[in-house]
Image 1 (cartoon, helix red, strand yellow):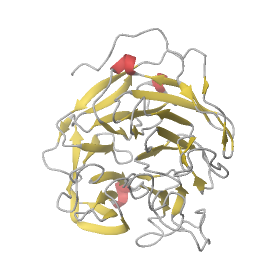
Image 2 (cartoon, one colour):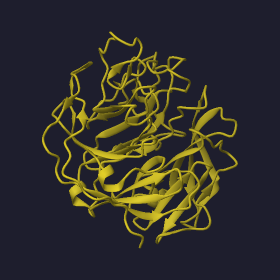
Image 3 (cartoon, helix red, strand yellow):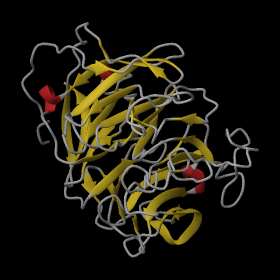
Image 4 (cartoon, one colour):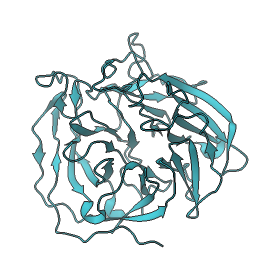
Amino acid sequence: MPRSIRRARRAPRMALVALVVTAAGACTDHATIVEPLPPVHIALEPVTSGFTSPLYLTAPPGDTDRLFVVERGGRIKIVKDGQVLATPFLDLSAEVTAGSERGLLSLAFHPEYASNGYFYVDYTDADSAASHVVRYTVSSDPDMADAGSASALLSVAQPFANHNGGMLKFGPDGMLYVGLGDGGGGGDPTGNGQNTSTLLASILRLDVDGASPYAIPPDNPFVGDAGARAEIWAYGLRNPWRFSFDRETGDLYIADVGQNAHEEVDFEPSPSAGGVNYGWNVMEGSYCYRPSSGCSMTGLTLPVYDYPHTEGCSITGGYVYRGSASPSLEGRYFFSDYCAGWIRSFGVAGSGVATAIDVQDHTVDVGTLSSVSSFGEDAAGELYVVSLDGSVWRIVEE
């Protein structure tokens, strides 16, 4: 097996800057945690390479034999026994516009996939006009989807070519969560971030089993509000490219891509009633954006962690480690930056008010990577790193 990516260890590092949120809409200055970090070190084990612009990795519930890798150009490929199968699981290249932030963006398997064969994809259509969420069904061959089984779930017009979002994830409640960016353009020119009458700039929560194409969960926060879309679970997001649920606690982590100055991780503890406003475009990270100073933070939920563009330019969100192979990593949230290529992790502490703690930069362990487009989680809770250059690695403790 190829050797893991490692770097010589140094003395334990001090914690990086962490954001402390004190109350609804209020925050302190950034405070540095001064305790030495626990001796957590990682390595990256190569899984396979040769993909064409991979953007995501996942696996069906309970399936510990296969990994499914999503390529931006429209193909989903299977890694089985360490080898990439020659025939794609599904090929949507004729349906998809690929390039920059557009393409086949995500894949989610239904919690009951083993019995119903349903899975969901999110892609930008061939006209670059809209984002589509479509359900497909596996064929009689478990390594092949039924290409003719498409059932449209949702279509959302996109005014610009960027900020399509695209993440799909089933939550611990069995609902399908759909991430949508603000529609693109610099600074949210159409004002979608603070507008709940549009689906853009939001994470949606859909009951895909309650009706066709979906039902609105009755406990969604905007049910009964005539001025808002009832599908919305959370809003005030610029481009929630990747979000995830902690499979043990149900907590939601949202990595929201910033504008010109700050990248952020938002945190929603479980259980939650939803309806959280994460601040865009009033805020960028934990700082005023419009206006640039003196903005009102009333009713806004600020990030649990953010960092400036001197340290990167586009956050790539990941997962909380809940696997069994690397117990020292338990409970740490891993994420990266597409431009800077580092991998960082932190824990979350606090009762009612969350704080990022023990923030570690793992560059000393693995160096910097090229174009980290996504993280992935397999059925056993092990974590993976995906590079747009075509490689996939597994995160392990060193």
